[in-house]
Amino acid sequence: GLQDAQALADETLSGKQTQLTALQGELDALRGQADADRQALTEANRGLTSEVAVRKLAEEELKAHRDRLEQLVEERTRDLEEARDSALQASKTKSAFIANISHEIRTPLTPIIGFAEAMLAGDQSPRQKRESLETIIRNGKHLLSLISEILDLSKIEANRLDVEAVSVDPFQVVRDVESLVGMLAHEKGLDFHVGYEFPIPCRVISDPTRLKQILMNLA
Figure: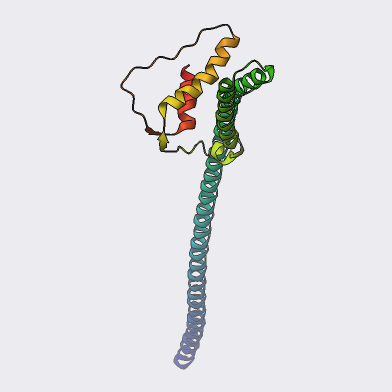
C-alpha cells in the first residue's frame, strides 16, 4: 500500500511539473508577443512622429509660399498704382503744357499776320517795312522755338524743359514782347506802353524764349 501511494504521488507530481512546464512555455510566448507588440508600437510611434514632422514642414513651406505670393501681389499692385498715377500725372502735365503752348503759339502769330498785312497794304515807308520784316522774323523764330518744344514730347513726359543760359539783350526781349502784346492790345482797343526803371544791364545771362514767355504772361 505504501508503494502504491508513493507511485501515485510521483505520478501526480510529474503531472504538475508537466503542467508547470507548459504554463512556463505559454508565459514565455506571451512575453515574446508583448515584446514584439511593444517593438511594433515603438516603430509605429516613430513613424507617426516622422509623419507629423514632415506634415509640419510642408505646412511651414506652404505658409512661406503663400506669404511670398501675397507679398508679390502687394508689390505688383503698388507698382501698378504707381504706374497709373505716373500716367495720370503725365497726361495732366501734357494737357497743361499743350493748353499753355497753344496760347503762346497764337500770341506770335498775331503780329506776324498783322505786320505782313500792313506790308501788303503798301502804305509803309522803307524803314517801316524793314521794322515789320524784322518783327516778323523775330516772332517767326520765337514761334519756331515753341513748336520745337511741342515736337520734343520727351520733355513733356518727363515734366522737364531744358533752360538755356546765354547772353541776352533785355531791351530787345522787351521790344519783341512789345511787338507781340502791343498788336493784341491794339486789336482789342487797349493802350499798351512799356516803361523802364533804370539802371538796366545791357546784357544778361538768361533763356530768351523763357524770358519772353514770362514777360508775355505778366503782360
